[in-house]
Structure formats: structure tokens, C-alpha cells
Amino acid sequence: MRRRTLIAAGLAAPFVARAAEPRVLRMKGSANVAGIHVPANVASRELIQTIGPYGPTEFGRMEKQSTITQILVGNGLDVGDTDTPSVCAAANAGGNLKIVGQFYASVDLVFTANADKVQTLEDLTKPGIVAGINTPGDTVHAVLLGALMKHGIDPAKVNIVSLGGSSARMRALMAGRVHLVPIHADQSNDIAKQGNYRTLIQPWKEFDFWSNECWAVNGDWLEKPENQRAIVDLMEAQLRAHRLATTDFAWFAGMFRKYSNDRDAAQWTDERIKGEWLLLTEQVKAWPVPIPLDLAQFNSLIPIYEKAGIVSPGASFDKIIEPRFLAEAMKRLG
Image (cartoon, rainbow, N blue to C red; front, side):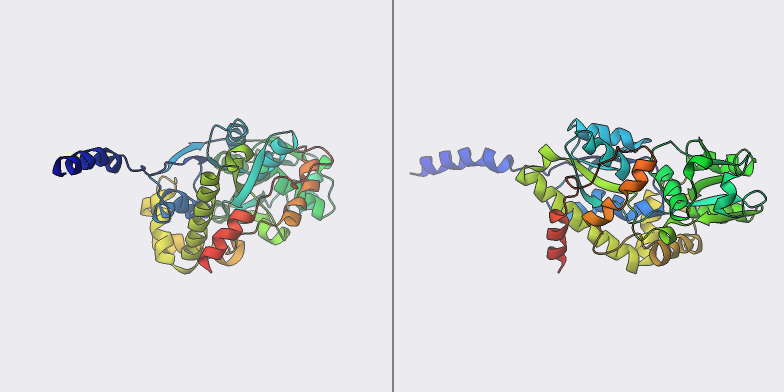
């Protein structure tokens, strides 16, 4: 009898040793990590491990978020932080993609002008005036066109050129090569001290709703129960991060220094970080609870996307927005 017990114990031991290992989620996101990106980065790389059986997230970064969208179309990734317009375009072209959350709400980019040349948006239609953006058809281009349309200005009358990232755009503005560019709000404050520059477009004031970056997944991937569980856990982690970011400045400051890719982020003073934090919490309202994921609000962006050439007429978010996992995460929080 004792021998049988020992044999049973010996057989059981390997199964104990081979207990399920923590799941490693494969994610990709923007190469740029500004203050607005910090809570979702913390959620997906730290907080989710306190909610479920997850190991350190495999989180890669890419310069072009549209590339992340294409990887998701091919089901080569678990979850992607990508730009909302490219998801809409890919899904309406036949890709099976779902938006399950937003990386943050609204957008912290502003459009800043050389005030010697441009005082109003109408001035952008004058001969010789140039507006610089990152890439035609991207989300920043859509912000500009949406603002022009709102104020009754024909975008076709505005000379818009491609310039690359926010640092390149800021240098071009200061060198006088262009007269309006989208840059981060803190960059706009910096250059205002160096010359006659003014902010013409603050998206959080122009739009009742704007989605810049979203959490997207492949629809086939989402059909598996274990993946649905992962999304609920991720959304819960993000909601917790939003609450911390909006109520605990010390937490945000520490995480900003840890995750921001600003080369001097570790040396930013509390005073400097607080300026960013107040902008994001009080004006942009970047980290709401609950996170907006309303179909009608997303569909309100379609006319702007059409004008930007992002989607064809008849496009919609109808089969893209999937709010039930975010709703389940909200129930968990109570």
C-alpha cells in the first residue's frame, strides 16, 4: 500500500511542476510615449499582472500605427494600440477588426501657428501659407480637416504638406518653412516663449468626441473565451490606471518618469510634470472612467474620415465597436 502511495505521489509531482505558466500577451503600440500615453502603458505592462495570470507583457513599439493595424488584420498580434482611422479603414475594406477600448480619450496635440502670418483658420487659405502634418490620411490630418469643416473652411483651399514627427514639424515652423503644425501641447508652450506663435486648434475644445488611439484586436482572435477574459482584464487594468492618474499626482509623476520616451523625462521636476498633468486631467480629460466607447460617437467621425480620404462613402464603425468587455470591466469595479 505504501509503495502504491509513493508511485501515485511520483506521478502527481510532474503535473504540479507543470502548472499553467503565466500568459504573455503580445502587444504593440506607438513608439512615442507622451504623458497622455502613460496610464495605458502602466495598465498593459504592470497592472494587468495584478488582475490575472499574466507574465511580463511582450510590448513592441512601432513608428507607424497603421502598420500595427495591418499586423492585426493578419492576426499576428494579441492586442494593438493603434490609430482609430486606420482601424476603421482596414475594417471597412474587409479586415476583421474590433475596437475594444481607447488608449486614452481625445488627443493632446494642438495646432500652433506662426502668428506673424496666420491669425485665424481662415488665413490658412491665403496664397503662400502652408500647413504641415505627419502623413496624409492619418488621425492628425483628420483633426485638422475636422476643425476646418466645423468652421466652414474648404480644406481643398489649404496647402497641406507632409513633414513627419512632432519635433520635425516644430523645427519647420520655427524655421518659417511652414505656418501651422500639430505638436504636443507642452511643445506649443515652449515655442510660445521663443517667438510670435499662437495655438489655433485645441481638439478637446473643437470636438465633443474624438478618438485618436484605440485598443484593437482581430475578430477571430476575440472569439476565444480565454482572449475575451484577457480583454476584460486589460480594460479593468486601464480603468484602474485612469483612476490613479486622475487622482494621484505622485503616482502619475513616478510613472511618467518611468515610461515617457522624452530623453530627459527622468529629470523632469514635479512642477513641470504637474503642468502636463493638469492639462490632461482638467482640459483634455484624457483618462475618463468609464472610457467612451459609444457607436454613435464613433460614427460621427465618418464624414471627416471621408473628407481625408481615409474611408469611402458608406463606411461606418457599425461592425467594429465592441463595448461588452469594457462594460464587464466596469461592473467589476462597481
